[in-house]
Image 1 (cartoon, rainbow, N blue to C red):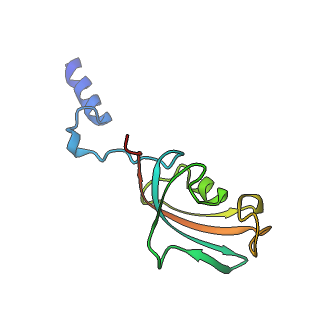
Image 2 (image 1 turned 120 degrees about the horizontal axis):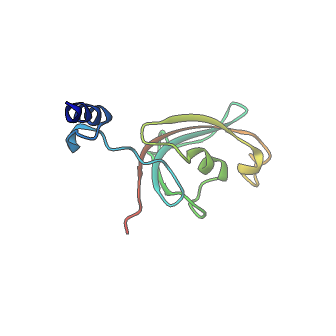
Image 3 (image 1 turned 45 degrees about the vertical axis):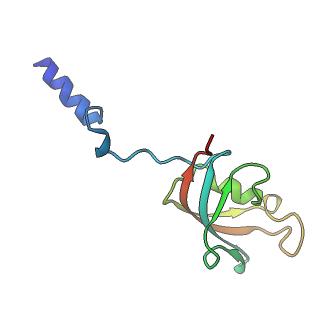
Length: 118
């Protein structure tokens, strides 16, 4: 009788399910992982840039990824299918040019997160 209840508890916890019955956990965006995403950037409601018409961007997160720091920080922890809207403070935005010293508004949607091939 006790073994039967133990089996029921294991099944309820997901341990006894065949591997094809559960979705694999989605990877979270982290430094060193490759992330494919769409973004739109605005400042004070004015359009700056977007990938919506150019196609998604793919980057290996980390220094040298070509992203402004605030966009990289905003992507961290996101998983495929997630969408997030957040502000980017001036110190994490553009260091120079017409958008320097401005708070940016970002909208990102992560399409995929994967490990770098070894």
